[in-house]
Length: 278
Image (cartoon, rainbow, N blue to C red; front, side):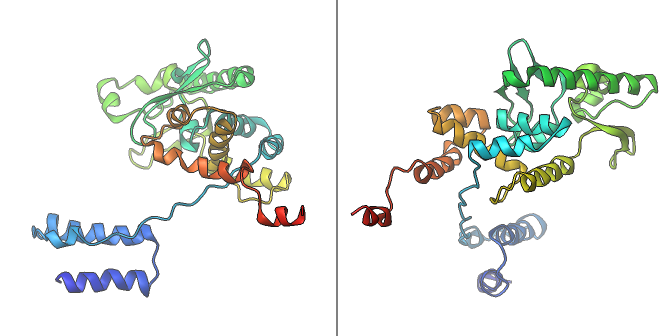
């Protein structure tokens, strides 16, 4: 298959199959892998094939009143998680994977380990959640103690550390802040151990709360992160600080929230409003 055939194939995917941009990228990457790594053929022209640009979508953002209504429609552990994600800007899995050792009540911060891009970062711990999070840690301590009493395997820790320190997963500091209610079988190791809460629980709780609060916008867990960033910028936080809190490696990723503000801030008056005021 030469340049003409590959080009026709990729064009067919885009024009006839109408595949998404990510699927188109996967197809091109698969072809590159086939020729370079499997067939051992270097095709310079293949790297020059133009990839379709990913569309930049402006994220859905809730007003502060909508966030209050959404979180007010939640209760218990899910309410704490929802408040924590909005109050810190953490991603869903970053919140679920919090370990006891990463909560610093004295300095009022949380350490987010190995986030997207493999980097660690520090986020603020909202003071209004201090007592609720302390109570959650106490509940987690009771779960950890029961696991130790029955001799359950320790929680999963990074592979390199588990080899060097086999008992590390049994230590309190490595336990989950939000442990799952039951032990489960690790599909890779076939070891029964305690996992953190599954993401589906919070996703379902957010959907139910959104309906209860009668929010018409599309709402997901990630909407809390979008709203956190937008509200910080609205309140005058500089964009570099927001970038660090979100863990973006490139400030251009954070800049997407400024597009939300340009319209929401009302800096430009609609021509219709001006016409009606004449």
